[in-house]
Amino acid sequence: MRVTASRPLTIPKEQHLATIYLNSYRIIGTVHLQVGGRVSDFVNWNLKEGPFIPLTDVSVFTVDSGELLFKTEFLAVHRNQINFLSIEKKPPEKTAPEAQPRR
Image 1 (cartoon, rainbow, N blue to C red):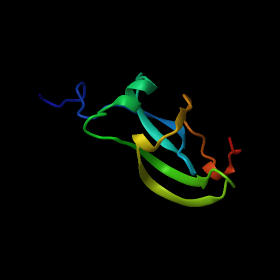
Image 2 (cartoon, rainbow, N blue to C red; image 1 turned 135 degrees about the vertical axis):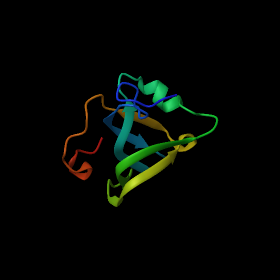
Image 3 (cartoon, rainbow, N blue to C red; image 1 turned 120 degrees about the vertical axis):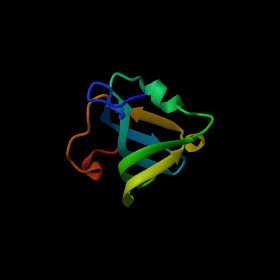
C-alpha cells in the first residue's frame, strides 16, 4: 500500500476523558478513540492479543479517601481489573484531573 496525503498511514483520533474504577483505585486519564468510532469498539479492540487499555495524562486516586496517589504520562490498565469505566464524549478540558469533583 502506498502512503500519500489522501491515504495517510495514521488513523485520526480524538481525545476523550476516561474514568476507570478498580477495586481500590479511581483512575482519570485520556483515551484516544478513532474519529467516529464507538466506545464499545475501543474497549473490545484487540481483546485476545492485548488485554490492556492505554491511557495518557493519568491521575490515580484511592477510592476510599479520594487521595491523589500519583500522576503519570502513560498507564496501561488491564481489562480484567476494571469494575466500571466511563468515557465522556467531549474532549477533556485543560484543567488538571485532580481539580474535578470526586464521582
